[in-house]
Structure formats: structure tokens, C-alpha cells
Image (cartoon, rainbow, N blue to C red; front, top):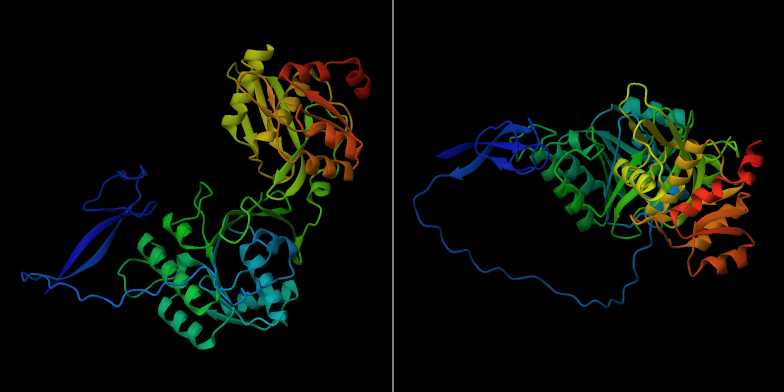
Length: 465
């Protein structure tokens, strides 16, 4: 006879529990245990027989006479950049993002572009009907592309059809809607998502077909399902953006075939997503040069230098309790910069509200933005603007010293291209070389107090007036 066992599986980490509990012991998540049935197989009292020895596996040498397969180019430069120069045949990609951010639109445009280049493309949707996908294609002007469409949620028929059609590129929208009849769990559960992702990844490797999986995200911005899915696939991409901005940012957090932390910038329009070739000019569009509480940060996103505006506002607390609000930056890093300013420079933010915003909806995680954040805070607190046509970069130590950063030449070259002739940064070994080659003036900072002396000058007051 077959014994049916009941397990309670955490939907956050995938850990199995013998009984229900309000809190998962593995990840600490509350109300995340869901009941699932598991088939433990026939119960037998006979001893298990020893398994027969297998034939083993075949080993190969690192050297090969066969040339590597060329990458598939979508001719969408921003998408190819994030993928590492194109899509590798036989790779599995996972892309996540908030609902309505444009994941399906981006992948439909990429699928249509690959079909025009001669690739055989399949698009399997588990959330929309075929007419809905066709309606989006007509709106994007892609109705003439040779893309095979299908709507199915059962994994078995999908794999059978893909093995028969032998496509070069497959889009599964989305992985949370698929289910396998080998499991008794409901679609979207941890067991189903893990099993379906494993089978599709195995299909991609065996059939040399590139598979893109669309994943839902949780309220924390992480891809829903067990973390093991991100370890299965070759690349993990996040499609970010704010509803109030027309900019969309495609970010790579894992890539086995290219650099990580690479970004691609798109602009949402009525005709779909349009790639932005010069994101620095777009993020700084309409900026007032002598506004107080603003600083232009010369950052590096992956291999690309990007200039962004950091805005800060220091205001008296309304009800005596100071508030800290951050958009686009790490809140714990802001607390560190405020502590250094209070301890090392004598600035008091105890009874004041501090608001920090990265313009354009970009999320900055580079430590080199510390000095730009401090400059915006000091400018707002003193009500004095920074020197005009100047970019700021540098990492702040807890001692109040300004530490050097990498790739100064690329940062200043991008700034010089957009008309910035001055820079505020740390003193480093490559600073003088970059200053001499690019013809710009760099105000060299050693301590954070040097930045305060630079802002609180008569030249800054004259520039404001």
C-alpha cells in the first residue's frame, strides 16, 4: 500500500516541517507554511537491495577543437549589454520585477528581434491569452515577427512541444504559473516552482536552447520562490523602476557569462520600451546648476560611468522626533554619513528631518557616493550651493577621511563629455594624471572637513547670487 504523508513547506525558503507552525524555524518567516502532500512510496519491511553500479560519467579535457557557439544578438544594445554581449545558447535566464513594470513587453521585443535575425523563437504564456499577446504585439508594431505563441501551464505538454519544435529561444511567462503532474502541490508553491525550473534548466542545457523564465517578486523586491532557483539558472536579471518615472532599469545581479552589476536603461513609451544610449544626460535633464541641497555624483554602474543627481533636504523636525527618509540609496549608509558629520565635523542633525533622493528612479549602491551624499547634506544644511559644473565622488571612512575610488578617468571623462569642468574627490595616485589628461580641475579632499570649507566660501555665495 502507498502511505501518504503530509508536509508543511515554507513558501519563502522551501524548508519542510512535520507540523504547522506560525513561524518557520529556518528563515524566520511568519505564516509562510503551506500544507502539501507527499508520496512516500509503498511501505515495505524487506531490506533494501544494494543498487547496481552505474557505468559512471564521461570526463572531457578543458581544451576543445570545436569553436564556441556565437551569442545571439537581439540588436537591443541595452539588453545585450546586461546579458554580457548577447544571449548564450543553452543558457537559462531568470528575470524578475514588479507587476506592470514591463517584463513581458521587454521579452516580447527581444523575441521579435531574435526572430528577425533568423532564430526560431517560442513564447509560452501562462497568464495571458493568445489574443492578449497579439494585441500587445500590434501596439508595439511587432505583429509581423515570426514568434510561435502558446498558452499552457502544464509542464509536460510544454516540454513535449519544445522538444518537437526545437526552438533557439524560449520565453516562459511566468514560472509561478507552471505545474507538474508529478507533484501534488498547488501551482505557485515552492515545490512546483523548484521542480519546473529544474526541468526547464535541464532542457536548456541538453537541447542547447536559451530559456528565459519570468519570475514574480515579493513585497520586499525579491524573486518569489526558493532561493535555489537563482542558483540553478545562469543569469538573474531584475527589471526595476518607479511608477512615477518613465525610466526602467535592467540590472544583472548574477551572470555566468558576463559582468555582474551591469545595467541597461530603457524609457517606457506608448510604443514600448526604448533604449537610452546616454543615461547620464537623461538623469540630469532639467537640473538647476546652482540649486542648494543637490550634488552630481559621478558613479560607475557595471562597466558604464553614469552621472546622477543626489538631492537632500535638511529641515526642522515638526514634532520633535527626527525623521529619515531615503529613496534610491541605503538607509544604513545614510545613518553612517550623518554620524560621521556629527562626530567629526560638528554638524548636528538630532532635531532635524533628513530626506535623501536619487533623481530619476536609479538605485545607487556604490560606496563612492558617500561624498556626494555628504555634499548634498552640507549644502542643504548651510543653504549654500556647491561649485557650479562640478561632480562629486569619494568614499567616507568612519574617521572622517576621504578614501580614493577606482576608475577616476572613466568618471571624469563622462563628466567632461556633459560639460562638467570641475570635480570634488579624494586625493589619489591617479588624480593628477586624470586632471592632466582631461583638462579638468579637481578639488582634492583629504578629510570631510575640507568639503565643508569648500562649500562655505564666498565663491559659493557669489555663485548662488
